[in-house]
Amino acid sequence: MKQKQKVLAIVGATASGKTALGVALAKKYDGEIISADSMQIYKGLDITTAKPTQGEMQGIVHHCIDFLPRTQNFSVADYVKLAREKIAEIASRGKLPIMVGGTGLYMDSVLNGMQFQEIPEQEQEKNLEEIRQFYMHGEPGIAYHMLQELDPEAAEKIHPHNVVRVRRALEVCLTTGGTFTEYQKKNRAHESPYDYFYLGLDYENRQDLYDRINARVLKMLETGMLEEVRAAYEEECKAGTAGTAAMAIGYKELIPYLEHKEDLEQVIARIQQETRRYAKRQLTWFRRNAQIQWLKLDKNDELQEISEKAEKMIAKAEFLCYNRE
Image (cartoon, rainbow, N blue to C red; front, side, top):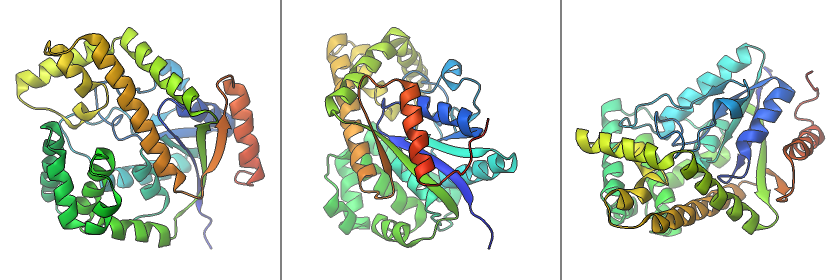
């Protein structure tokens, strides 16, 4: 029997330290990183979507970041195809593929070997554009009503105000030819083509994570997020279009300030609040996955200590029976 390709997966909420740990483990195990972030795939808005800088990458190759125009739609099926290609490519060089990110649907779909029904690209594009327009024009209720029609069972389980889950469920329905409920059942029953290890990051005290989020938002503003969003907003107003990346937290919240409708303090507080809410939703998604081995963190933990704890968990699971020098 052919041995399955090993894939290390690092998941967790935004600002939990996934990027830094991913880089540290890539150095330890001679790996390359595949980003599993639905917003970092788009070009531009680098600060707003918290893309790792060259300094943060520390020479480790990162894939699936900053390669797509903001106006182009990209489905979970598209991501799965690309990520699997990258896994094979990395493995062919004798390196360890390490998936790092907070978009649980992307990560789970890849690692669980989900198969997607072939739908004409033009039809997929039309469907995804329709969903995007609902959210861009402040009409998430229409999107939820559409989900009720396409997959009433999923709609019953998802709160109408949980726009991220509604949008993801709709995306699956409209790009796979099935329902989100069917997708989840297949996901649980499907045999993975990979031998993978899920490592999750979380904080013992939730307030420590929230403090990290609040501080990171302020740092993003200090390093140019406002100017970045202003440039993108002016470009899109001039062109009369709004790309998918414009749905990123930080972009849409800053628009009232750019339009002189709210002061900066108000929108900063809203960005922090929306990011905290997003982190909570991410953790809710990941906690449903019993395969994730959780590494509980303290606000005083240093990266070296976190990395050593992660290595011990990997060794205990006998996932990697070697340490590359």
